[in-house]
Length: 414
Image 1 (tube, rainbow, N blue to C red):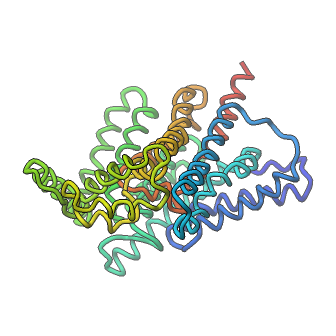
Image 2: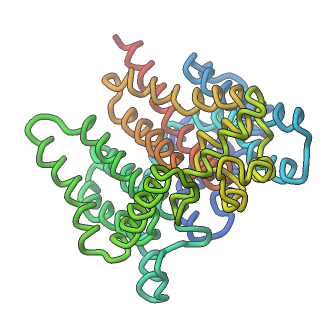
Image 3: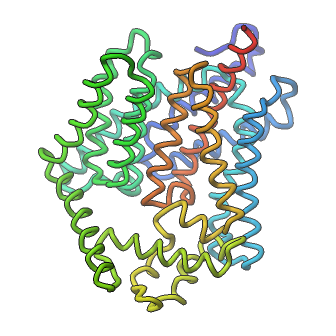
């Protein structure tokens, strides 16, 4: 898998190191603290060395330059909003997370040179399915926990497991003789999703699966596969008590919230408090619509609005708005929000537009973006927490660089 036939020995070992780290990245991130961040940081340091030492190579294509500029600009929006609103302890503390949107530039330049890096990543994803299921079984069956949470949170374990399941489905034709493993590994990853109790992961999984069916399955197979995709979550709801409880609880909370709104009352039970948090974020956004109130200043800004139009005190107990889109709009304003939307959805546009030229790489990128977009509807951690940011950036780097290379190689061959 490594392209080492005509490379100097040092380059061969560096490529092996890089591909080894890429292989390890998805395996134990939900089980061991700092796994995702440490590997991302090591890869960045290697790429930083390359930035000054390695010359030549294939120039960046237009699509790659656009996405990298958007990533760097998103970090710039963090600096702009923090400077305008004043730097505090939280802004300095979380700078190390946001700087990754700038660090991805040299990382991208390095990884695009290794065509086998994406294959090693997918090999790691296959092993990650087993690790995720083992973690979920240990916590749910042996420790008796109501939700599998791993080293951090069910809201990390669940989405990661959902991504792993769909990444594996998307690379069905690329596993060659090992293709028979996928019917075993995908259900294993789905078990981890179910045991996490993450409702955001449930929704993201269903949406990604529907996208996969729409884009991947052709002919008369589409109808039965679609029925199977819909039957799996229904079966999980009816036969797995923890799944049923989490879904019923969310539905009940939303029903109560709607009744409160219709009666002119405010406040929200359980998970429905997110609706009030989004309302609070909108109030905050109107105070500073251009650059926002500052990254991580949502909580302090919201406290000033508690009681206004019935806004409950509970909304001020959270550090972010539990929606990446709303949170970005409030914290970085229209400037940061516009850049954020471009950074997230420009690759989706490109993957979709060029899907027929390189379908096997396009579907991975599309599922990656769709998954993060759906997870972000109920959680802001996807773009403000180090683990999620590392997963998003490394995954996008591997999928986008490989897809762009495949598309342009096909165009040159025509």
